[in-house]
Length: 273
Ligand SMILES: [Zn+2]
Image (cartoon, rainbow, N blue to C red; front, side, top):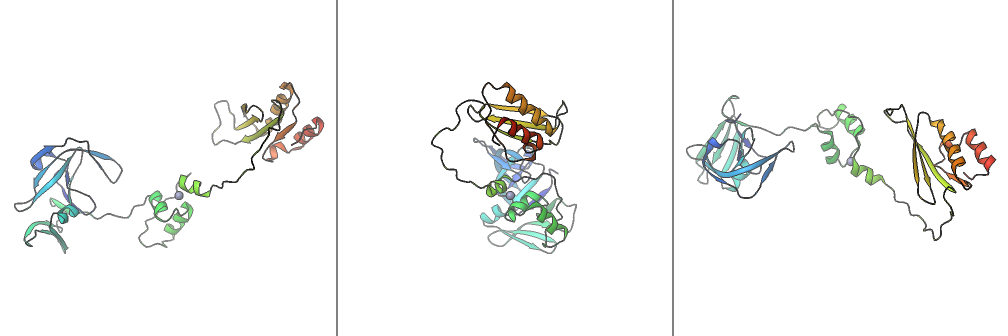
């Protein structure tokens, strides 16, 4: 590949991966990196001149470490006053006097020079961002039905989470400020919730988590459970371990804290749920 030359309309400057092409090469003093399309990076080792044909000498060519091919930047050619013409079977570079200085034969595929055209990307993230954060399901449906011209077939991937989308959907509710603490001792009011089932069981075979936060001290307990209904026994234990009376439990009204076992517990102890 080191002998392949690519006329590139996308790259910002000429760059080459092999020292042998340079007629002159100066090392660069500052650290400079080139970012490639796949987000990889190549270090610029030097800048020099390259004789592309008898009439065309490329100036300011970057010598990039580990670059597998040679890129001729069309935009840099234009900046230097050249003209680049594409026509049937050939790509021609003309100088300011319109003299042909370099010609790429596009009919021979195996020739030393080629032109590449950027193709549509099937990266679903890129499509998601370009279409104003369109939902992934809709994107896959649109592409499978062929409703957008030029949109390649996109594959549905699992568990795609876009953070900007999530932030955009967040609602910030205002809370009225509390001027006094209503709770007077640890264990008086407990906040609790269960989490799970987890996608994977823990080493000990646990699927659920019970989280308990004491309102007074903010002391938190995280207890792992095999079944969701173990929550009751755990709360009962907390109740027996506390020195002062538990007065209230606050939950998100989930079923695990509203079953008959819990209802009897609240009633017998006079707890507020
Ligand atoms: Zn998004």
